[in-house]
Image (cartoon, rainbow, N blue to C red; front, side, top):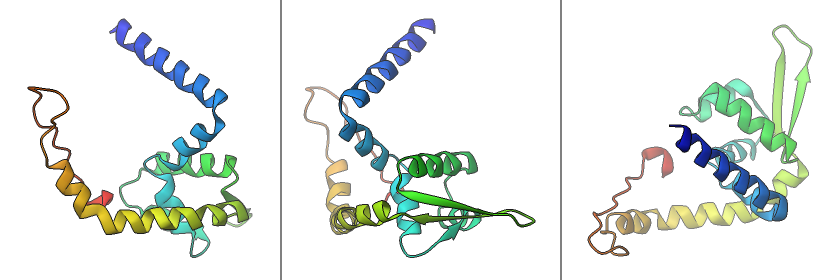
Length: 145
């Protein structure tokens, strides 16, 4: 058990070191995480409140949505506006930098939509890279496309 945690700690240290050396990779890691693209897509057409984002992305937990929003704000991709009302109102919207990301991201989204069936078919193929390895079938959930 202790060995497992030390391996995880070593991997995290390596990843942090690589992020410091290669800031582009750190940014691509953010964009490529599970939730950031979905949040950005929801914010592209208009300003959203936290509860609207929760409803629009039903399989994200409140904690993970909060974390994702904080990270996107720290990266300058979204802005957060707090209104002193009862109850408090918080709006999220894309920044100019966030809108500029949506241009290339839009192309990737179109590509993914056009090719999702081909990717599903490829995932159903047996793993031939390792002789004797069992097939690595990786089902695509409804949330993935």
